[in-house]
Image (tube, chains in turn orange, cyan, yellow):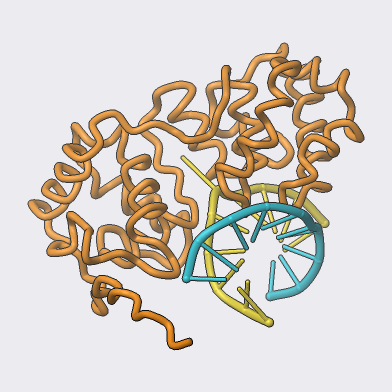
Length: 220
DNA sequence: CTCCCGATAT
DNA sequence: ATATCAGGAG
């Protein structure tokens, strides 16, 4: 995608949603780390349903340790991969207490030493909790970047580095939220809704999906 | 590369 | 029935 097209692409998404925010519910950086770690291969809606009650009583790493792994599992058992996620969240909390004074570090390398936290989760925390201009490439952004031609790559890291180079100010801070929300609600994996996409004319995706035909009445 | 793994949409 | 969901670790 050309420079002017990229600016137009972001300008439209920005005009459509001036103040995009994460849809994960978290009251502080620690809860954010936990919520994002839990969100792997799960929907935000599902994560929020599980964390709503959990976060009423657990707001710090020490409180998570006091709760314990078994009780945590009961809270998050409706989320996929809950066994490894529970283990990771306890280990992550232990490390925050032992090494970082119970605080979430504002540093990608430090974040990535936390169990269950990889580059994508670290980038989300840096952006949402600390206002860094990071590009957290999840399944949605990977798909949108490759489909549209905005930022293509074989791996999430490759797409991230291209986004970093291709995204100009003043769009850098919120770019990853505009892309993820666009991917979640319009440029969907199964049935992309190109007929109502506001950047379809800038997009390289060939089979522009038509609007659904009106449902025919069923024969009895 | 495989494994982890329940809820939801199609 | 099956693909997909704010991935990460071994």
